[in-house]
Amino acid sequence: MAQQKPPSAHTQSRGDAWHAFGALVAGVLVYGLIGWALDQWLGTSFLVAVGILLGAALGIYMTWKRFNAPPADSSQQ
Image (cartoon, rainbow, N blue to C red; front, side, top):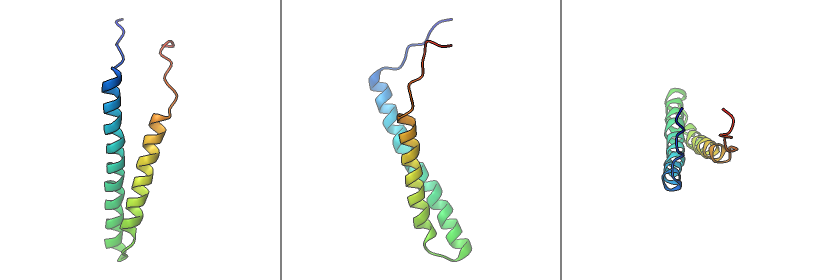
């Protein structure tokens, strides 16, 4: 079968930056929304802040985990 070329370094770095940004923003939005909904349901006012901080932390963790993964060994298929 034909082997695929790996993406160039320029394309890879630009895609990685958007992935990191997307993971951070998505975490803040999703967990902030969950915190807001819980605030409305429970009648509290602090869970939205907890959700935003938790979402940011998880977004940073997901980004760190992705970029610190060991490189895939392409010789084994």
